[in-house]
Length: 262
Image (cartoon, rainbow, N blue to C red; front, side, top):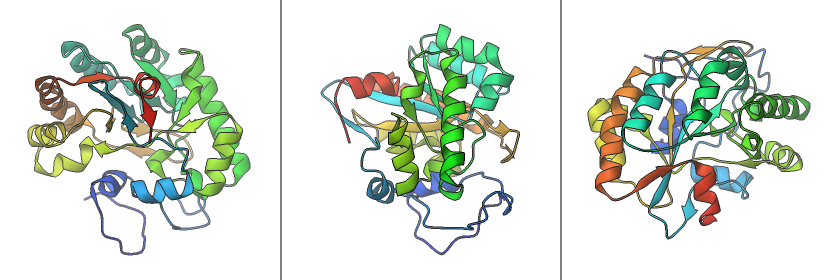
């Protein structure tokens, strides 16, 4: 069993389950405010950040594939291999400290036609820190990914998808736009990797934004160490479903440019 942060009872949909799966407990000293009104659903995220992106209205047969928390030498290479095998490209919302620790993987991501984007520098939960820290995390995260992808700082994904009106205002003030997701691969892993890939892949529609994870380890003030091997195992079934439906996996930046973000 994985530990999760104590919170009031809520009815969990797939989106919130994805936010909760396999996350370690955070030191209360780091987030002294304690549990708040976590934005664990698309509706709650839109309420506090209407400028954020959950999916895109488009006529193109595209879905955005996105991977969080890397790069991680245990999983990122295998994720890249699977994407290459199926001719798909993706956006990697990378943790700045991981980019600095594994520059070879960041370089490989870009060299193989994928895009980087900002997932903060230390994977802090932005709704639980002051706005000076939010700004610092976004700026340092942007600098790390921009060293490999010059336009990578345009988009950011708050860790866990947790945000607030204050976080959204700081994000916009820095000229950034938050990207969330419409479906999450890890939310279906309860039935096994193959079934998860089939289930999520069968439900995809053009304009969807898929969340998965290529990173499990983050060191620093908010450490985590999560086994992502089942995500890697689920990818072939997901990508096969995608191909069978005539859909193409692309970076979220390209999907946004080809339609109307929602």
